[in-house]
Structures are given as structure tokens and as C-alpha cells.
Image (cartoon, rainbow, N blue to C red; front, side, top):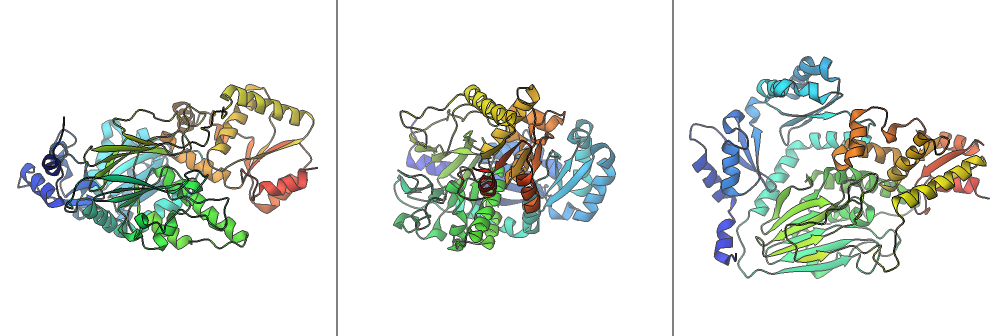
Length: 533
């Protein structure tokens, strides 16, 4: 079915038109306000129950305006955080085993981290309803992760402390998305700003007659003289006029230069999955730390990273969101690292569909399901080609596992030590699972496996996002039945320089997983320099 320009324009409602449409659906006696949360339409009301769920007023509104609608309680019915926490602890502390409670006033949500979410929710949601009715806050329950992540904790706290600013930013993002239509014929163009015919500094720009969207903002780790994408390209300027930035995943070659945009004036939204948000903070902070230790001056600082964090808009896989007047975004699993995504852009109310694959893994791994390859529509595909040459064949998991077993067995039998340089994110967790499998099966005699660098914190972030892992691994993390590979006794995080020196001086067999994966720095060099002959 073809759609004329006039019909397309009718399908696209302004914020005022949406409010008018909502007013015709909601009974006059119900008190409410309409606000924007980036591309989402927020209904704020002192009587949330009057709107019902998907089959009630919220469902009718969403069907009418064809936008995602969220329901928020009005501040007038919300108790203060201290009183709410006391009520929650009195209600469910004994049955739930509460670990921590986080408030996010930006979304009027309280998240309860506990050992038993099922008991916390209560029979038929009784406890959750009691909290909403008594305190006003929307409540979520999450299971306590098996490994505590300082990064995740810090991000939750930082976002909560800047809730008012983030609320205003979401409104600003939404007003930009639902701005009046610009005149002119539809067109769309993609521009290469980095990573084409080279490794690193991934950066793509999608421009239409109405908007500009950047996908990935990476760094070229191998270059000290030209590490950034082509930010000076005419299409990329001015930065402050860009509509949105999208991240496929957190690796530095895709997200390492994002804070530079904020240093030079960009103040728009950054769309990524929650795991990408957390991993991005870890890797960008380490990039500054490593650069400082090597005497290199980074093009941004921690304040730029913090500014970036305040502008992040979380988007889960499969969730479609408006990010510009004529662009909708959907993330799909890319199978590369935690939270990695392929980006599907629905442009011009369906006139063109573009997919940016990001880095991807086509088959299932120990950590992740295989990359999604089915999209509703796709006219243009931009795909990574890291292993795309005719001779680039990867060994099967069985072959790789057997080779690892042979190397580990041979090393341990002769009383040796094994150094395994790994990337902190993704590869290290894969190796941990492979080693754990060898030890549990009895194929190899267990020895201490030391984790040095950011590996333990990156693993903790994996544990905090079980829904982004394979079903098997997710179950082992959530059940806590002794089969969680990340908490096995043989894995021992290296706590500081003294412990590292003690490991180096110890003559007994062991395995060391340490960063960096390319052996161009990091703690792996200490082991290599002392043990290599």
C-alpha cells in the first residue's frame, strides 16, 4: 500500500495534537497531565488506577496516538524517600531479604534489590500494590546479583541525584522529536565518519531532510595522532544541532569518543541498552586512567563522561522508540558483547529502513544468543566485516575448547603458569566459562585462576543484567544453585599490587587472566615480564 505525503503528515501528530486526542478519550472528571519522556508519552495522575492497564485508558490512548504511553504517579501522592523505604522494609524485609533500595524520581520508580523477588511481589502482586497505594511510587523488584558491581551502584546513585535535571532533559528531547514538520521532499543519506576500510573509530551519520542521527562514536586505539572520527566533516557540524546519538555497544572503538561530543556542545540524547550504559562508563573511565598513566592527554575528562551519563536514554531490545521527527529506532541482539545491538532505523514513516549491524556474532556463544538476522523491513544494510575475508574461518566452540584444554593440561602437568591476555568485556567471561567447564568436568585438575584488571568488575556487570545472557547462563545466575561459573572458588580477583607481586613470586601452577587483550599495556605486562624466559 502506498502512502502519500499528505497521509504521512496526518499520521504524524504534534505534541499539542496528541494532548487534544488524549483529552477526547479521558473522562473530564479524571485529573491528569501529559508530559514527554523523550519519545514516550507520559500520563501523570494522582489516580493511576483510573487509567487501568493495557486494556484500559492507557491502551486506548496508545492505540489512538500510535505512540508508547507510560503511566506515572503525580508528586502529590508520593511519600518522601525515607518514609517509603521504611514502609518497604517493614512490609517485606523478612520474606524478601532486601539488599538495597534505589529511588529514581525522574521516572517515579523505586527499585528493590532483594534475594527473593517472588516473595517480595507478594501473592497476586499484593505487596507491590500495597507499596503503590500507600507510598505512591511505582515499584520494581530485582534479584540480588551474585557479584556486586560498583559501577552499577554508582550509576543508579548518580542518576537518582540528578533526577530533576534528567526529567527536564527528557522533556526537551521529546519537544525536539515532536517539533513541527519542516517543509521539503523526503530524502535520506548515510555518511561515513570512521571505521570504513579501517579498524576502529566507528561512526556513521544518517541525515534526512528533517534530522541528523549519529550511530557510534568510537576511538582508533592504535593511533595516537588521529584517534577520532571525522567530526569536522560538514555534515557533522554543528554538533549541538544533532538530533540523537545511538550506540551499538560499549567497546571503545564504538563508544570511546562519545564524551568528546559533549565537550564540544552536544546536549541531545544518547540511546543505548542498559548494559551498554554501564559498560561504557567502566571502559571510558579506564581509558582516561590508562592514558593518564602513560602520560597521554585525553580529549575529554570525567566531567564530560558524567554529562554524557545524564543524557543517556535506556532502550531495551525489541522496544521501538521515536528518536527524531522522522526516525524510529529498534535495537536487536547482535551477540557480540553484553547489551550489544544491531540498529534498525525506520525512516520517514516507512519510506526507508536502514540496519547498522554493529559488531556481531552469527552463532550462539557461551554468553549470548546468536545475532538477530530477521528485521520487519530493510532496504539498506551496513554490516561489519572484521572477519569477512574469504579465508577468515573461525574454529568451532568444540575445537576451541579442546585446544584450550590441551594447553591448560600441558601447562599444569609440568608445574607451569599460564598467562591469558584477555579483553575485560566479553572475551574474559567466555574464557572463565570455558575454564570452569574444564575444571567441573574433571578434564583438567583445578588450580587457582587469578583475575586481574577490570575483569571482576566487568563480570559483575554481566551478573547485573541476566536478561541479556543465554537462557542457560541466566538460570545459573538467578538460581544460585552452585552452578554459577562466575562465582566458582577457583576464580580469585587480584586485589592490588601486593597480591599481584605475591602471585608472581609464588612457584605453584596457576592461570592468570589479565588485561589488556592486545598486550599493549595493563597488568598482563607485569606477569609476562616476570615469567617469560
